[in-house]
Image (cartoon, rainbow, N blue to C red):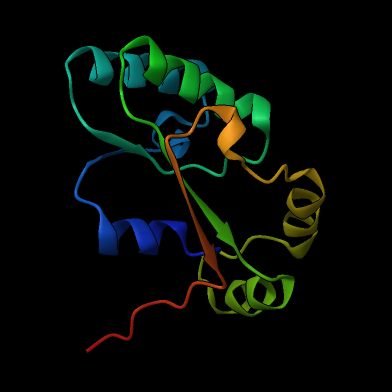
Amino acid sequence: MSGKTTYRKANFNYEVIALSYFNNNRKKELEYIEKCLKDGRSIIVDDTNLTVSIRKQHIDLAKKFNAKVRGIFMNTSTVLLEQRQKRRRDSIPLSVIYKQIKELEVPTMEEGFEGLIVKKDYEYPKST
C-alpha cells in the first residue's frame, strides 16, 4: 500500500523474496535469503520491515556474505495510505495500518545500509 512492491517492480530486476512467500515464517525466509546470498545471487527483500530489529536480521545476514545492503523507505502519508487502502481488492483494515504507523522505526544509515533511498508519497506509474 505504501508503493514498495510497485516501486520495486519498476526499478529493480533482482530475485524477490517476501515474507508472504513463506507463510509469514521469518525463519524460513531468512534461511532462503542465506541460501541466495551464499550462492552469490542479487536479491531484494520486499517486506514491511517496520523495526530496526527486524531489519537487523537481514542486514547482518547480508554482511555475513559481504553483500551490499541498500534500503528503500516508502515514506507514505497516512492520507495516501487510507486512499490506497480503499482501492485495494485485498484491503488491509485501517486499524492494522494505524498500528504499523505507531510501530514504525524509520530506517537510518547507522543500521548498516550502504545506501538508503527515501520515497515520499511515491506515485504509482501511470498505466498506458
